[in-house]
Each structure stands twice: as C-alpha cells, then as structure tokens.
Length: 285
Image (cartoon, rainbow, N blue to C red; front, side, top):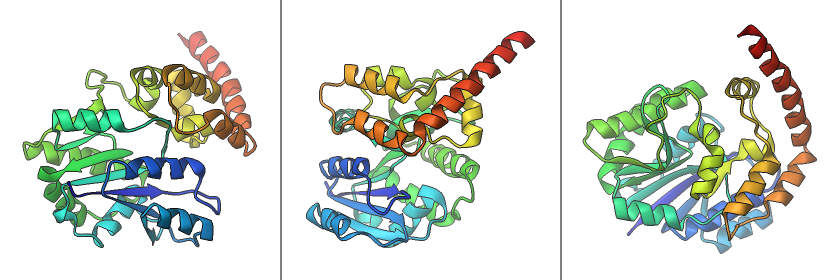
C-alpha cells in the first residue's frame, strides 16, 4: 500500500521537540512516506540529520491557514491521487503510546475517512488532529481543499473544514468512523477534554498537549471553568502510567520541563479562578 502522512507542527523553540520526534518515529511505522511541515524557520543540523536518518521529507511554509493551510500547500507538491492512504496529523497532541491498535481497527472496519475521535459540536464530524483518508475518499477531500480558501481563524477551521469535510464525505455515501466515538454526546465541549480520563482508560495513545503544558488560550480556560474540568497534568500522567504498559516517552520529565516555562503557574492560577467561579455559580442557583 502506497501511503503518505503530512505532519503539521508549530513550536516556538529552535529545535524540534522530543515529543514531536517520537510522534514522527511512530508514524514512520505506518506510512510509506512521512512529510514534516512547519513554519518558515531554519532547522538545526541535528534536526536535519534526524529527518534524513528517518527518511522524513520536510517542507517549510508561511505560518498561515493553520494545519489545513499547511496540508493544502503540501498537497500541491505531491501526487496525492496516486496514494492509497493519506494521513493529516498535527502536533496538538502528545503521542505516548503506539498506533498499532488504531491501524488494526481501521484495517478491520474499513472506513473511507476516519480519525481518533469524533464530535457532535455544530454537526457530526471527525476531529482533525488525526485524520486518515483512504483511497475512495481521497479525490473528494483533495478537490474540497483545492476549492476552499485557507481558514482565517479557528472557527473557520471547525466550521468549514472539520465539519465541512465530514459532511461532504457523508454526502458521497462514503464511510466515516472514529476509533473512539462519542456520537451519543450532544454537548458543546470537546470530547478530548470531556472524556479525557475515559479515553485514557480505553487505550487512546495520545492526549491533548494543552493538558500537559497548561497552554490553553484565555477563552479555553473560561470554557474549562464552565465544564468544571480540572486539567491537572500530573493526574493525567498518573492515569496514563496506570493504563499503559509501554510508553514512548517520559511524561513526568516532559511535564517538569514545561513547569519551568510557567505551566505550573498557569495551572495554579486557573485553579484559584475556577474555585471562585464555581462558588459563584452555586450561589446563583
């Protein structure tokens, strides 16, 4: 099977982070080609050596259009219609376990367009942080990406690309599926947060980076308060360690490194604000 995975990554540091390299190394096991996409920046000799040693191509693009913008640009440079399988993956999650179970599930179920999780927010769709498009759906997806301009904001990403693509694939009578489906959940919140603990126990091999790094946007912190969700990185790591026998990287070390960059301070600030927010909500009821 001839397959390609486009991995979109943004990182502020000068070097490719260790968790991104771990993700890339695991993707190599499941795709014929892996292409590393990031914003225009010089790559260090060590990073270039890593990519070369693992036969990973790379492309540097203007930081515009979010991940779908990166994927659109990359598709212009590769004969996408010649592949049997295309992966669209980004680094918004930390991959801590192997991807074998996902690909075993996919090969058994035979979906045309699939991902790790789905969502009913706005309309049913496959979440785009990890997408795999198989041969029957590839022409549909490529044409849609060509016809639609790059998204201008996150709302546009969700409405026009996440929801829009899933809707279009469904209209073509192609099969959509998620490895960890939450079709029954009709709420507004992201299943990757609402069901974070449940997903870990069920064996999902990745977790939202924002949980471990406490790197939510201001509006996302407010959403977490409304959810009454506590994004405690250490509790998440403990649960992951209890639920997984083989981890691809040291999550405790990763969380500790982020604490030096203010992650712990951001989390503690959130806890104080959340405490008073919940108290006020109770008083208003």
